[in-house]
Image (cartoon, rainbow, N blue to C red; front, top):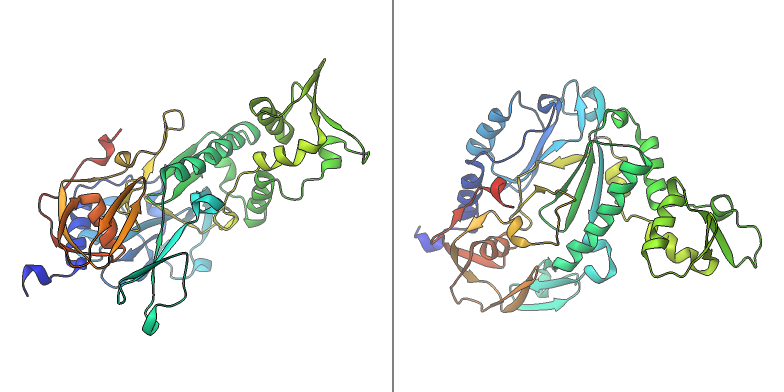
Length: 380
């Protein structure tokens, strides 16, 4: 087989193993009590119920056995994390996890359907290409959408810190389209699914009783009142009113808010979290500094006080360029960049673009050229 006939998987395996050979991932606390899981490049299946006594043994596994497209550890701590059934693992407790993805916002849910055999693409999702070929669904990611999700991360962080009094809170970019927020505080470790469901309901302001929250009694009541010093949900709403353009009146120790603006304020106070992720006590979590092979970017911690808008370079571990041969004619957006592909015409492009498109099967890698890996922990 000539070099030009080698498959994408051959090159992707080299790329991924080169990255992990630098041993970049961060070891979570109580690593030996966690279930480890991965989706393998070799057979595209999830391998679960793994466990390792040390992070070095995990590196041995992924560098000599299965190549991880995605690498996870359980949010739960177990007595026997290797047991092949959750009910046999011996649950000890779980971190509290939250997932905020940008595609949940209406303006950020754009998808392109691509048919390779006919060399065509369509805006939106289609069921089938001609001849029953499965389309490739390409989700359009935009910097402004990642930043929109981060606004909800900030709101969630403040709720957890101020309203719940929690302290050990981690935030990290998932490497794709949003953020995970994780609470390691010992206060929450033994919360069951029902308790976590109540937390979700509180954060999303589900089934809010306006009569109890604002003492609304009269149908013609024009205003609701808030004290200057509030706590809990009322404090969250007061902060939003004071920061927004909503007109209000100050009367002594009270803030008067027009009742017809109440729903607008409540909507702003809600946080668009994925309830399933938070409620599930056995949820899997991505290793920090692992690769998300939906994009080729790094799962990286975020300092909430230093985040200044999404910058692709902050999460891109690749340097140099790669020669690829496009499999379709299309102008494709990649975050705030775009690239024009001409089917069958080999081109030299930035390593991140090449890997991103190869992972989506839109190009075939021809040569790694001057491809390289940089130290992701030094990326500011």
